[in-house]
Image (tube, rainbow, N blue to C red; front, side, top):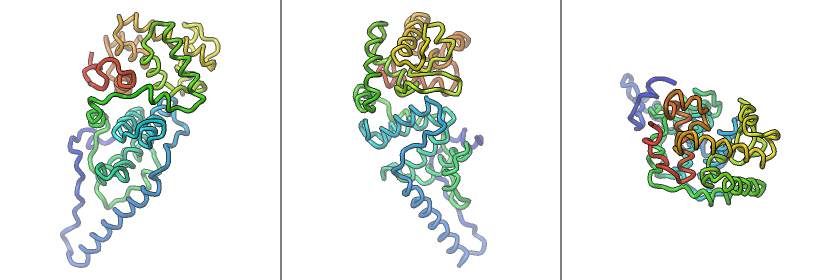
Length: 313
């Protein structure tokens, strides 16, 4: 990613200035091209405005995020909340998914009127295009300027400060085949003496309660257990939801004990491994892991949620 996009702190659109040379008809022609290009961008995105995210080839955590973000954006299965959707789409982008940045650009191009910003839309389309998103590349041209944008999600998370995620409502809005899985998690959390909201939040972050999920690193099932963790915690049938959940929550309980009840450290270890947390003597400085911890705390309603000082120790 270009340094100009990483380091800029000015989110305002950059005005494209037509050349002063020539003036007259040439200046009018350039202005007409600018107007036409802007209209073309709006019409192109409007035609795609109601489509759901592309989930093909996305790993389970990204699929989970995209499903959760779409639920917030569309209001299907959860309260419509475009700011929550933007934050979750940004977390997908932090995970390396071009679809996350494309969806942010789409919201700025054709979302609620008060959020529309052509420069920001093009900025996020540019980020997505740099990650190989073909549709975003098609929406860009050489005439309109691209506003510098940040890709660390800080602004989107700040917009959610003070908000509480209604986990119970979100779980209730999931498809009917996931409801028994949610009940298995609740029951096992009680058995393991783990906060139910934490158990559900980790499961949502890992797979969005998908019993058949498989990651590129071969993490499997609802709780996304790699084979070594399965062996450690007695999981012999990783796609059996009950056994997978039992193994995953035993691991989470073990992590909570290892890190003296520090939920942030335990969640970070679930994401990056306990060895990594030990090595850094706290939450490792990986953008994906830190966003994961903030997201799980936000979903669960535990800790300080999206407050960034929860991921600096």
